[in-house]
Length: 78
Image (cartoon, rainbow, N blue to C red):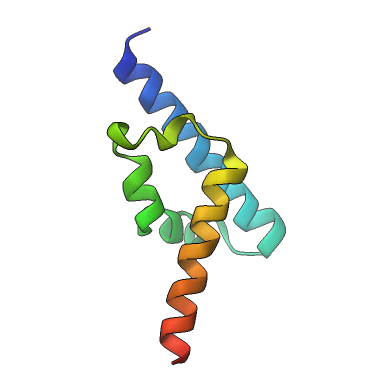
């Protein structure tokens, strides 16, 4: 398997897991969960192989995503 293929597969798996967490634990619909993930800075970083974020655990990546959402929520509330 090429490095690019491995990267794409790991990115896809992490994306699916992030969406699954949002659906199962937060009660967000699947389309909205995908939209939230795809429009996030976390996903942009996940999509850049140079960040190596794709080799991290889903728990770690989700914590980054949660922090990002919290920042956005806090800035809107201010």
